[in-house]
Each structure stands twice: as C-alpha cells, then as structure tokens.
Length: 465
Ligand code: ADP
Ligand code: MG
Image (cartoon, rainbow, N blue to C red; front, side, top):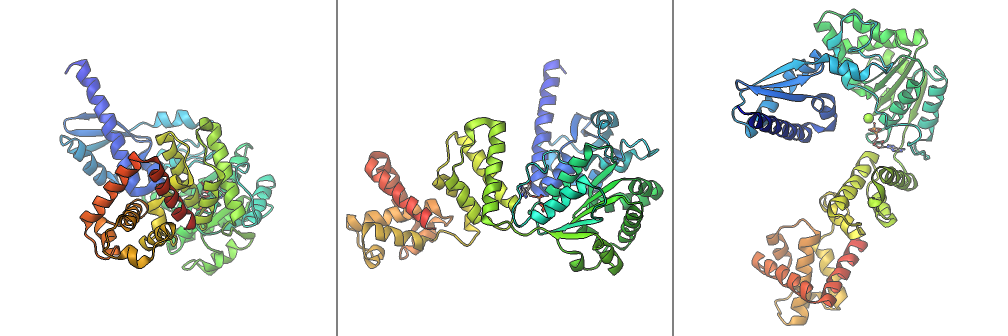
C-alpha cells in the first residue's frame, strides 16, 4: 500500500466513522451520544476488523452491550469489508485532560485504588450552565435563590430538592451549583440518578461495592439529577438511601432534581420520600411569556458574542417563538437554534415568514396549523369574491387566478399532499394543482406586482394564524 492510499484510507475511515456517529446521535439522542459515542475514535481497519478507541473499560463494556450491533450495522452500510469491531482502551488520554478538576472521578480519583473502569468520565459538569446565564422570573425564582443560597452556604438547606417538568431548567440549576462549587476545594460529584444506578450495579458485578460506597460517602457535595429514575429499583434504592443518609449525617450537601415532588414519586419507599423532603423542596413552574422572551433574547446575545452580527433574529420572531412554545424552554431554544442555523446557511436575515416556514413541520403538529380552508378564506377576502364562485368550476380569469394562488399557497404553507389539496378545491385533480403552482411561479417571476400580491396574501395568512 502506498502512503497516499494509506492516508486516503484514514480519511475514509474518519469520514465513515463520523457518519456513523451522526446516525447514532439521530437514533439515540444527544444524551446518549454525548455520554457514550462522541469521544470514541476510529483507529484503523485491519483484517476486516474495525478498531475503536475508548477511554475506559467501562465505556467499552457499555458500548459493547448496548450499541455495538448498531455500530457494526451502520458501518457495514458504508464499508462492507468490516465484519468485526474491536476496542482499544486509552486511559492516558483521558487522564491528561482531566487531572486539574477536583470533581471526584472514578477514572482519576487518587483516593480510589483501582477503579479506572467505573466511567465517570462521561458525567462532567457542563461549564456553560451557570447562574449568570440563568434568567430568573417568577416561575423559577424560588429554585434559583435556594440554589444560590446553598452554593454560598453549604448545608443551608439539606437536602435541596428541586422539581419540575422537563425542559424547565433543573439540570441548568444543578450544573450552576456545581460550577460555582468547583471554584472551591470541595469534593463534588455530579451525576444523573440513572448513572448512579449503573455505577452501583456495575460495582456489584465487579465485586467492588466498597469502593463505590467510599467514593460516594466521602464527598462534600452530591448532586443527583433526575432522581425519578431510581424509583422501582429496590437494590439501588436501598443503596441510595444508605448513601444519602450517611451524607446527610456527615453534613455533606445533597442536591437533587426530579420531574415530580417527593410525594408523587411512586414506587419509592416512604422513608426515602420523607428523607427527601427533609430539607427544602422547591418547584420550577412553566415560564410566563416575559421570562420566555427574556431567555430568547439572552440566547441571541450569547450567540452574537460567539458568531458576530450574523445572528439577527428580530423581536417579531422572538415574540412569535415565545408565544408558540410555552411548555418547555428546551424546545423553545431548539426552535430558536433552528432559525439561527437556517439563516446562517441561507446567509440572510430571516423574516417572520421565513421563521414560520422553517418551522412549518413543527407548527403543523401544534394547534395553530394553517389549514387549506384558512387560505381559501383569506384569498377570497383579498380578491373580494364569493366563496361559491371561487369553489365552482368556472374558469374565467378573475376567479381562476385567485384559485391558483390559493392552491400555490396551500402547497407552500401546509404539509398537505397535492391530491389532498386538489380534493379541497371541489375534487380537482392533482395535475390541476401542479399546473396552478407552475402558473403562479411563472407569473411571479415575470410580474413584480403579482409577486408582491402573492407575498402580501401569504404574510396575511401567516399573521392571522
Ligand atoms: P430540565 O433539566 O429541567 O429538563 P434543562 O436544565 O436541561 O431542563 O433546561 C433546558 C434548556 O433550557 C437548557 O438549555 C437550559 O440552559 C435552558 N434554560 C432553562 N431555564 C433557563 C433559564 N431560566 N435561563 C436560561 N436558560 C434556561
Ligand atoms: Mg434535566
């Protein structure tokens, strides 16, 4: 093999692997991707075997038992020669990167003799989630102040239990506490309850539960996210309970988030529930419009500091997003990202209409769907026609043209198929619809006034919706 082909092969391998990673992200979601897939590197293909490099044995075991089949599957679609996957563990890489933090980490913690494979590697605090970029409003005020208070005075509320439904900022607040405390010399563990469970089960398997216990019982601060995942699993509940008790007895701070209040945790023993409620229990409510808007504005500002002036999402769009996405801040921010990304790709400042089009599929899943009937009504009004004429079979231009415009807009502003659209126009054929769309596009290209007219109607429809 020449050097060029060797390089070519490495390039292909990298490209294929990154494609497989993207697929895995799509099917398993961002959390799984970040925890298990993102940091895996593809090293080489030899004798039909793909070598992946991971950082700990634990990660390897986890990938083998959960994702290896899919990985091979996806990889074979891109490179048929590969029939096996094998793993190499490179711990040094991981150690180098992380030995400055004082977060207790199974993989680096010196107080743990031999626990390199326990894999906390994937559970680090997200440094971007801080108190300073958390926007406070009525709905999260209590949780915010309590969290701040605890990060200033450990033990002030112990445990601190924060609950609320998904996407309202629990993980953000927990990370903010952790990031604040990271500046001190306190030993902190931050992890999801799910991970806590797996660590524990893993330690049983490896017969080193004592180490597990020591690690958890020797921290100053335990931050446990999404504790609802512990419910129902008896052994882990028991272990959690002991850990929890010994921490509280040692006056270590425990901070917990959950998607519901302690009392609403079913399948959790009562004594644990009452222990959980023993400190301060605060909830985060869905944000009001003012808070939603402020969060969006702040996010735009942050984006601007990173990417410069390209991020020009005007207030009209922000108000629109804030009005449409009420229940989850995560979803709302996701939508903003999508608009920003798309405007970057197209290299233009989005109008409200652009924003609505970008979100067409999302919007169609919600109440405020634009229907063909809406479009017909608006068009009829615009041209001042009786609906009966509009829907009749008459072909005179002053009726046929608006009808074509309505068909064109139905295609553009809804997700309905051509036959569906035809049916709504008194059972016309889909070829009629295609013809209408073509005609309108032609006319728009040839006649500025007409183009403006269609644009105007389209805006009116979007605004009225
Ligand atoms: P949860 O853990 O409750 O499901 P997250 O903490 O993951 O929710 O929040 C979802 C997204 O919304 C995150 O990107 C987070 O940074 C953002 N977010 C939530 N609340 C706020 C807030 N008050 N200010 C700024 N960003 C927020
Ligand atoms: Mg969360």
